[in-house]
Image (cartoon, rainbow, N blue to C red; front, top):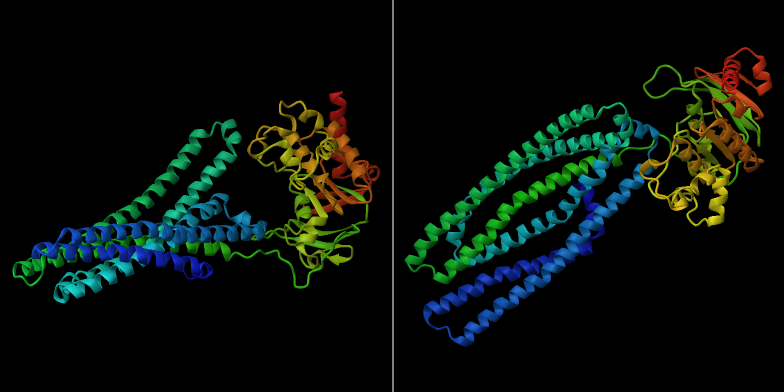
Length: 577
């Protein structure tokens, strides 16, 4: 919980005001028994009159009013600060997650991360809110009650405090196990979240292969584990609270015997006995509540451990000291003896890759699945980290450029188009929310999707559902391409981004791109030779190596992978005619 002290310090004045308001609330309640003692003793002695009775009545009403008024303020300041801490932690966590690279996301599951951002932060908020209230309440109620009890009868106070050392030992014993069990519960929740997230994201695949029953069984087994972990915590908590109550209740038994005896012997007034019993009640609540507070803090501590584990994650890919800021690249790319290995693999994904791209040149890349095309493209943007001295842009190692500038100047449209839940218009204007309708229409025509959009009932205001579930694969790719219209990158990369589009539409889009890409360096990855044939040069990749580089005409004259693909596609085209 040390990490949380930074946040407590940031909102220290609010928390302090909340604790002061809580102090007033508790003192208002703690003075009531004194007023009642005075009233009972006066009645017992026969000296109470209507004026004095009215005074005692109004004094209790005033104390009740103060309790109600300042209870609002402690809730506002303390619970409000807890919400502020939760918000600040959530912002920090989200901002940190955005800095982490693909290496992190390849080994951590989305459901686990979501559990951190929901359940764990909720547990931390409870520790910062009700945990603080319970702790402050305990110290105020316990010690002020103890002070008044000592004033009434030191010997009787000593008797009723006998069970307290036992209470401390119980809390220390149970606290350790609550922390351990709750961490396991949170890990189980993360696992369930991941199962549900994957199932809902891949619902089409599950239904297509009729795997609902299988997924149900997997979730059932995970849910059983989660249930058992929760029940272990319930058993522990179920044993904890009754023991606390039992030990606290012993104090009442002691009071009834020894206190009643002293009243009978006229060693203690009836009013003092009633007041003392009230203070025992005030003490029992903190004694019971401290167990609840321990539980809250242990849960918050376990969750904070998990959050800190995430915050300790460092990106593998980051800016070097004194990185170079750049506004525009000329577009010259030089790849020199590039060899790349994925983590924990012995076989290289790319083997001694070398080539140059001149400014403004349009280059195609063709290769079968697994040949290293996407790996190479990701290295250009440092989504994967290339070895030092292997990739240069405008004569400088790409590692010398600031990441923000590098990625701003290189636009990558991947094969898997990312569509956000919302309208088509919101997706097209994702990078330029203030775009006017004329530009939106122009961008959709540029991506050859305009005619299809206007046929939808709500046109550009059509809701596409999560991940564009209502759109076809080709429509999603073209809407993603329409976003690029609002950018002005120095280098433009299409990584098989039109694979779901028919060849005729793809050729129209490539024609539109030629005008858009005048003077810009472009790399187009595709498996269709018809798309690549009019580019300046084509790089052919096989098993992580470059097999050939040349124009379309040169490559169809050489024996190799490109020629085979061209002949197969030409034959298929003839058959389709």
